[in-house]
Image 1 (cartoon, rainbow, N blue to C red):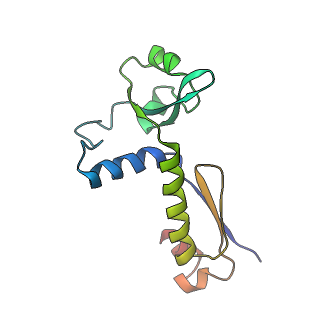
Image 2 (cartoon, rainbow, N blue to C red):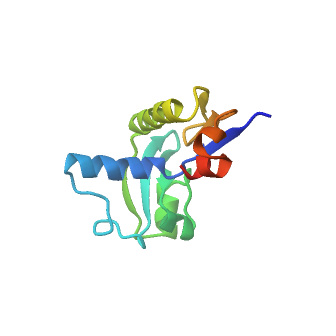
Length: 137
């Protein structure tokens, strides 16, 4: 029987930015610069104007979501913190993760939109001690 693992990474762009800032020595987005209880979003430009492209968990709790216009987001959440989106960097991060996952778990791997991957792990779980152990790894 075929086995697949789907990996959903809705916060990948924000996590990528945190890691990038930590590695570069730039001002990190951390608990001191963007507290966990503060809404934060990445913003990109589309035909209809500036829109949220990624949001953190606190933004979701405040009612924000990717695709929402920045003006509408600020009306809902006036203290929203933002940074520019970097779709190419996000794509590169997903491809890097895909390459690593392919080498570790499965030669058959595909991207699922811009925030996910799926892996064909048929015949792989026993190498990790079962499906549960594979998922935990």
